[in-house]
Amino acid sequence: MSPRTVAARLVSAALKPVRPLILMGFVLLLLAPPNAARAAAQEDDEADPALLLIMDSSGSMNASDGAGGTKIQAAKEALNGVVNALPNDSLVGLRVYGHRIPNTDERRGCKDTELISPVGPLDRSGMRRQIRSFNAKGFTPIGLSLQKGARDLPSEGERTIVLVSDGIDTCAPPPPCEVAKRISKQGVELRIDTVGFQVDPRARRELQCIARVAKGSYVDAGSSAELADRLAQLSLRALRKFEVSGTAVTGGNSISSATALESGQFTDTISPGDELYYSVELAEGQAVGAAASTIGEIDFLGTLTLTLTSPEDDFIADDAAVAAGERLQSIAVRSETIDPTSSDPDLQSPGTYYLRLALEEQGDPSEEFPVEIVVDVTGEAVEPTPTEEPPPADEDDPDQAAPDDTSNSSNNVMLAVGGIAFGLLGAAVGALAGRRVAGAR
Image (tube, rainbow, N blue to C red; front, side):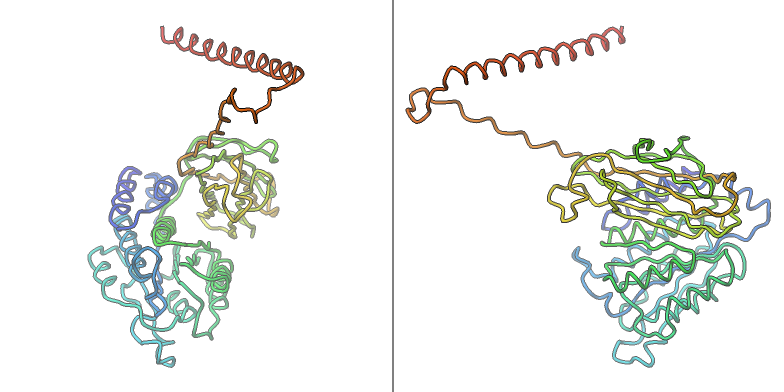
């Protein structure tokens, strides 16, 4: 399947939901699969990658999503977006919890998890029908859903669970993080990614723990649009056969030598113990999203980390995942919009922001692994507000005293210097214009 075909499907998916997908352009860059990798997989008779989506349908999902709808409506829109975007030959299933038993019956409600669409070849109309079939009602049995979800997937091949929740497990035991740890021991080809939909710190910690122990990634979704974006990103990543592509760059070995990047897709190589530095210029009104993906049979247990820092090298965000023999490992970070009124002082000033990509120092330091880096700068740069000129002096106003001779002398000097500066600037602009005219000829 060509990158153009998958990109067209992603665009179609972006247009389906009512709410716009904030970073869909970012996802398009990150997730377009090449023909070569899929063909190689078929030649090797490898099992196709399989994906199980696990969606929260507990009572709390009836709450407002902050955009005029409910969380469960936003979740269904996000699921439909994924169904529209997935390649035709995808192996995908859907499990839902908290959708049948109301939250007044804990004994039965904590067993309320159901595979409503078994993992198999993508049936778009069938999945859409199942997505319409459930409503938010009950409890949040995350641990039990993960236990059953692991058994929903094939016994071999690359397998991924993507779990979405807006809160903590309300039914433990079994503790969801312990369940995820046991699942991860079933093999290096099974991972669990988690999405926190407008979660509080306690729920975020629980979901982060699940992803960390199961070799996956955790992402926040603070809005309905972000939920659709994050779910599409993780789902498509789970199903694509990957090879790096983009403009070749070489990351610097420190902040002072960071390689400048703009929006685009890039390739580099990283070895155990490496720290690679990149820089991105952000103006007021802009934000940045970045992702890094590695491929290769990494035969050691090491952590891949991507960190975003401010112009003063203060921490803003990071993402990390354990690389251990997996074919594909992706991590992503993003900033909020640069705004002088932001409550975060690290996001108040425009300037040079930094990305640091590190691979834990284990394994052979001479071995290189290819890495793909995607950068997406969003938002319109805000021009600085011009300083107002003071009103002209009124010669007839006795309250405005005339300056003495010394002041006049200083003002004349400043005017002279200003005149020279403007003259030089005009000459430079004129010379530049002349070069462009000459070049055009």
